Image (cartoon, rainbow over all chains, first blue to last red):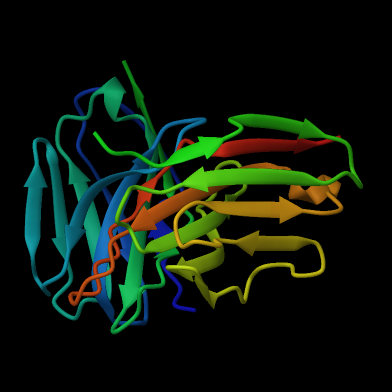
Amino acid sequence: TQLLEQSPQFLSIQEGENLTVYCNSSSVFSSLQWYRQEPGEGPVLLVTVVTGGEVKKLKRLTFQFGDARKDSSLHITAAQPGDTGLYLCAGAGAGSYQLTFGKGTKLSVIP
Amino acid sequence: EAEVAQSPRYKITEKSQAVAFWCDPISGHATLYWYRQILGQGPELLVQFQDESVVDDSQLPKDRFSAERLKGVDSTLKIQPAELGDSAMYLCASSLRDSRFNTEAFFGQGTRLTVV
């Protein structure tokens, strides 16, 4: 099983601030996804990255896949209270359909 | 919009009792996952199906947990007997299987299990 480490574990910021969360592994992933989960609900897919060095933007969210496909970051610009939630990264190894999740970063954006 | 259906949404059961969860994946999705999630942590894979076959159940406590997907469509996860430590959110997800090893998973709303 491939391990994904997310940091920080908890993050509390003021509305309008920028933030970055990280997802790291010693293993290479064929693809990596980011999900957002609200309390009591299932995770919702935000983005998938598959190419080393790839950058994807989703409104105020910017996702980057490391060149070696072992790590990824999520950057949020001008955070809003609606961004509050648990952010999870998940990856699958080369030739595998098994999806492994990190422990998540719990983000709180204070109005 | 197609979605993964799970039931029940909430379940309270006494320890030593049996409990079952049901999942109906998105139509056409060959891969089905059952995950367990402790509050505030990431989901942990219990079992993964490809059509009706189990492809990974290495983390499934087989002395008390069982899972089936008889016709390769919907699935049932059972716990018997339930223990206090089984209290968690049980999530079902499905994904397409294609030549690109697509693992984008779509989750249901989960079943919140409380064992008392």
